Length: 330
Image (cartoon, rainbow, N blue to C red; front, side):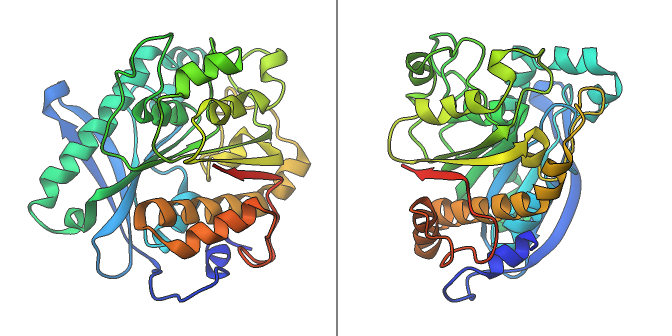
């Protein structure tokens, strides 16, 4: 079942839902940072806005063309998506090889990405004043999502504290977050460490990971033999406005939404993972679309469906698709 078929299985009236509409590729240039230029891809729903919208941040070696499965599904659910490509940690870095890719996973590049998110929020506001497609994005209903290093970006924007420091990268404008393959960081060895890092993240935060969601750039070791260490982000968040999806048999690329993995770093994917991927990605697309509908559009049906899924009531929600192996809200 496709991601859009999952969305079509939702109960309730269809009037508030739309098909995917215009797609625009453009370059945004930030004069305050020496003309740093960001390739972006804007996906809009069909119909009249303004629409809630999401900034999506790719993983190491990615581009604005990645996460297409999530972008299609969210735009089809009435949520616009702006895929942002980050120079210095994008596909040009991938072409330079594994050593360059590992070097790009740095504090410097993370801060550059956080600056990209802040610039995009400012630039969309500026462009919206002139009308056109950019005016279709609601200033009061924006979320931020990301995969892998993009999830690090999400965490920083949401208010993660680093090594006991204040959350200097926190941006107050986004209303909610989705982190695909989040990571607690090298120093989050205990639950207390995770709580210190994420205890100040008070806005709605959805973390997604799975049993084979290892760190593709790390050497083998106890922390990276499965995806359990990634759940520390959820565990460190305050109780209440948070969610966790865990999928058995899903690997790091399962959460990329079509990005694939950087070729120099990619470990051979298991045949069972590949066989399960269409069902896993349909479920991920549907559940994250519901999250955005709930958190950015105050959609009561979306909230009820996710809460039902958290209690194991799958049939009345997403229809005949794979059930989440573990899903928690709050």
